[in-house]
Image (tube, rainbow, N blue to C red; front, side):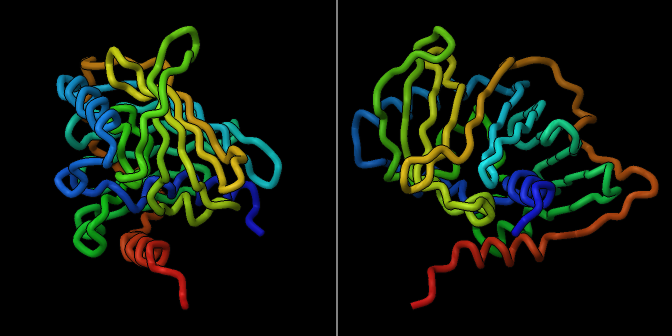
Length: 256
């Protein structure tokens, strides 16, 4: 049985090392013309966004208890990402990616985890950060042909477009007490940005939810925040091989 800290640290902090993010050319159509048309329109709106700052408020249910994770995120297209994370109100982490290397710094444990993203992709044909929540990529890490537009809803007084899909297998999928079978997510029709995502198990029980708040696009960002400098006195662990093995194991078909 995982401890709360272990579950949070592994399930959430490692959830960005995910299976998913297939090339758009391989996806082409969901098989539903209404869904395809709306997806194309959303992706067209997002082409003009070069930078984005936002907060993700995640509520995770572990062994009947609910925990909150707060991420303050800065993204620069195409590859820069900086995340300041607070887990369960006390565990702090920093996550940085320059598109080549992905770093996760746990100051309490004085450990930095390093992942070579290019090597992960060469070995697995998946992006190492595919599960990192990103409002600019609403259809990432989903089984493409399962995506369906289900109508409109009201979220915090605003009309949003709602989609449902089956999530692709990820490390989050592997480490949660129950695998997510369905995700329901809301996209704002004006800017194309995700506002909310909810993950459910096979019985329809909610496993986790994510709220995207304080969204700001095309803001000036400090590019130095995407260059991670290892703090003095910290142990660095390269976990690239571990990530590759986990992705291959998680994505393998069950034994007959």
